[in-house]
Length: 493
Image 1 (tube, rainbow, N blue to C red):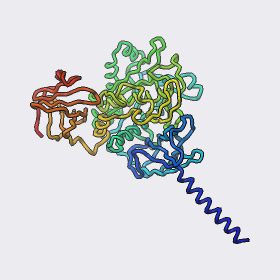
Image 2: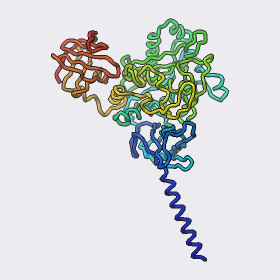
Image 3: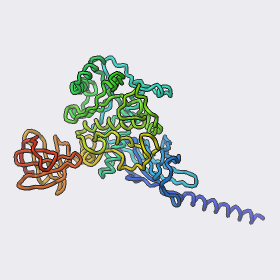
Image 4: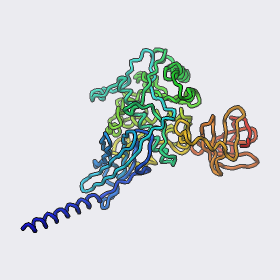
């Protein structure tokens, strides 16, 4: 009898072990562009991946509520999986080694994976300084609809700071993921972080009243407004007290807190979308009119998928019909202006394009049918991000990568402008770089070299450059390169 009981228990134990093994092998979590023991330099990281299963294969219905759960040292958060079994998750790290477990369970499907990441901040990098620009008599409030207020959202200074902090961390995470995807490693800009890994937000007050700033805006004096913000920065303690870094090369990303929706004008007054990396200090600014949709914390997952329609009797219509799109458009446009502060120009692709509709899937893959977004399987090619030339420029930028430098400046062939540190440099047989004041400005494809006249083409920006012994010219077509923009000559190494 005892033998039978032991045998039964042994058989039951073997069955449980076999069942667990079968259960554990039903699916597999595969991560994209990241491996365990990877070193990263930012506290929030965007992790992309997919689920593969033995039996059931995609596409699934988009209406299925399937999630993957990421668990770290002090967080646990679930993220949606789309109909192609793809997911994006944001994970929060602390300095040192972090073990993140990913768990997927749906009916008879399940999988688990542990990812180890080593977070080390590069304190040698000059940080991006995030902040708020406010009028002398600012109320420090921003536009918000009545529905959001009824649900508990705040539109005060504390809430604005939290939303800008979160946007900065998300932008930093996206930059790291994008540059790595382009083959440049997990580089990104640095933020001024406190002990809780939240960016410092500088509040810069103007010497002008709200009414005086509105007068500037209504009289179409955008560049005077921009110059005034520069003056405000130069008079600030954050600028005056800087001793470690070159003040003229500091980069600021500011939100204009006093921007507001004017129903009669039907637009956001005091909203400016401007950025420049060649006026010192370097600056990107954007209005506060879309802050109402931004999350106060990275783990407010519902914000990324909030398809409530906006009430345009209360809010600005910035090509953002839903809360979800206002979030992605707003953060994307803020990144666009900061991109200009990092010397990036407009392009036909990605963040630096003018098509804000591309920004709606920064951090999401899940797609539900709606009036504005038809059902579609979104992939990374549909998402915006730092594309091609922009990624290469950022990967070599002094504020993002202080280890490489611009070795291409000692290329085989080199054209130098006569009045500045402005170069066109041959990197190899296919690629040339334009470098201004030690900063990579454009990447060009080599077209031809006939009688010491070199023709180059910027594929992202769709224009041509010709370089001869006297001038640099540009044009929109190969047969129309006539506009002279620099004088100079060929120089030897």
